Length: 586
Image 1 (cartoon, one colour):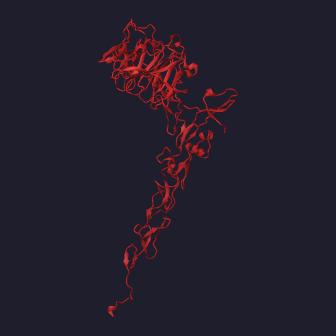
Image 2 (tube, one colour):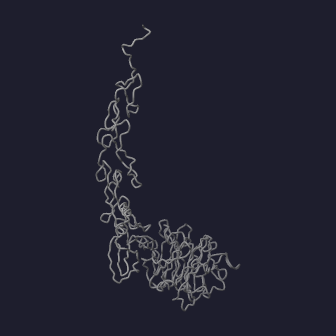
């Protein structure tokens, strides 16, 4: 057996390359074994938990059409407070200064997961400002790549507010009694005081998330490590964290954002300069979500300006550090490459507990769900189907694994399909509960018991036939009869019982006082009066002289003194001998 190394295709030395395909782990999918100048590598053909695109009627955002792919802004947020995410859309929301009043659009998520647009008084955002700056306040250099409009409940009062990004900072319009009020200067919770002009560039991108889990939204921003704009477009980025905390100035609103430095910044361990230059330099926008469902938040950075969409995935470790993951679920995502128009958001839109992605790089919104399959391009085995709701393969009875290629208990692989052991699907059960069937699971365990590993172990298949206990036979042990003196017990206690085979049918001796003198699986009969079962319980016999059947007719017992058994098993008194005389009569 060749030694093997689980490898990534990029690790292989192509000098002197030899390769072959084979089902190494016995899951029905071809794997790749590569021999190069230095080593033998094994590349398993495994399904990866990727983002898969849903299109057409499976895309709840398919009816939303952006009016201007570069200037419109949108994001998902629970506007109506019903626990699911809705969609808000600001026409020309990414423009530095909208030239005319455009009403934000609101799409409510319905019970079936589809979106319906609300207008007029049914739209709580119809009076929301699309631009938070007047012409004389407007900075001519609007953001190139960053998010401009973001709708969220920033102040935690139960209704949504509006945040607008520009080249020199973030503006805020809080909702008060159903009306939006723009807070300026020091009253703006995003204003950082005298350092405000030096904290922002036109290359920044940001998002709001409750990172510290204290019930309010914090600010996570990615911007140039060197804010000098002449090199910012091509320079390295850094991840900054601004905590939503109590105001540091009495003239401010009731909360404000404070930048955290050093290890007080939870993203301090992320060093983009340490990554390969081709992926570390870019105009990155952040998303902070629990990608791996382990209870803590991870960081995803998307290059929104490059000609190739790089997604960098940093998984938060148990020690609070973030670790860059070379392999990530964004590998198969295909998005239009329109520079300066890409937007994306990660959130659990459909409420299945997994993060989804919505993205736009044109006039339409693309919808991606995590899973191993999609309705249009299924990775499932030919016998499985793809569940549209969960994006997972639904395996038929007898198979499991993400692609439904591994056979379950009581099944063996045959011609690429999982074949059930005899009797498995019947009322009688596997091998009629009268034997055992070696399945693929048993075969792999048998190989492991012999210290066999690698291909021989993983590809082992069971015989798939029943090994019947005596006296039974047939494909599913359905044939065979108990001999005389024995009956069929349908819940027998046998030495062969295991956790896998708990219930057994077996031939056991007739009950006490009963007999059976023929072959068959019927119950035993009671002996006729005056008779007891033979020792092997295959017939009945009379008791010897001076004995009678026991009360349960299981054996013979001695008659009491002065009595003998009659034909009808009554105890009769013993008569005196005829020559016995009474002494008193003499």
